[in-house]
Image 1 (cartoon, rainbow, N blue to C red):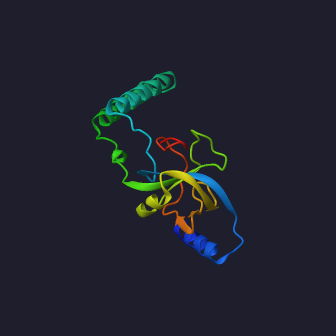
Image 2: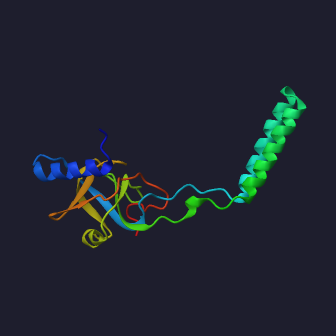
Image 3: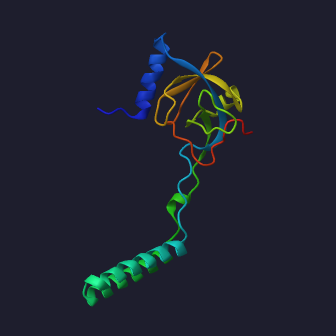
Length: 178
């Protein structure tokens, strides 16, 4: 049976509460508002998609001219032209819908310097942002890596990850950036 991240996180939380011999490290952190999943890669415009299909169709047809009969080359060139028209008329990429903004916690390496990228970023509850403040140092428990289980001690309170931690992405704040 394969456990989902939520199940592993709950088991990890129970272990932390029950065990007394857990490994703790002090790490810098930063709270900010953003998308828990990060930004998707940019999609090409209609013109870029159509040009890509035309160029690929031209190259494939040019290579086929050397080896295949002309009716096959004409069929491939016609298909490439049709696909280029479809790519040029197709609607925008559906992934461009903005991801919902959430309160996020970025955790940095133990020896992070100014401008260092976070090792992982995870969503936290909105009221925990006030407790943590914009930036600081906290006692981290768990595995600080994408997909890991993690919690951060602040005073006598533990802030738990609400989504699987992800790696650093473009737009995530560097340490020391305010």
